[in-house]
Length: 115
Image (cartoon, rainbow, N blue to C red; front, side):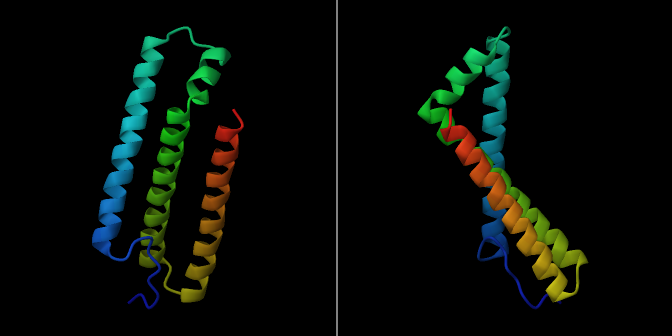
């Protein structure tokens, strides 16, 4: 039995809803990009910069990145609680994963707002 439950949400239902909401955002982002690629077959660097320079695209991308990280955290948490029984080891791995996810998010933030 797991003694320390440090889920992203407050309960399994909350995690379920977060996962589904993140999946919807990621699916919408993917569909948008596929349609954009199909409508702009000869795109280059300038078109790419123009697309990502819009505030709405930056927000949409950050929302998608946040959803991806939520998805990743909940998935890793579930795997670790199922397969890593030692609390200390599980805590260390979770700490490392959280640090990596925060680095990814802030890198995405700085790259996006640098455009």
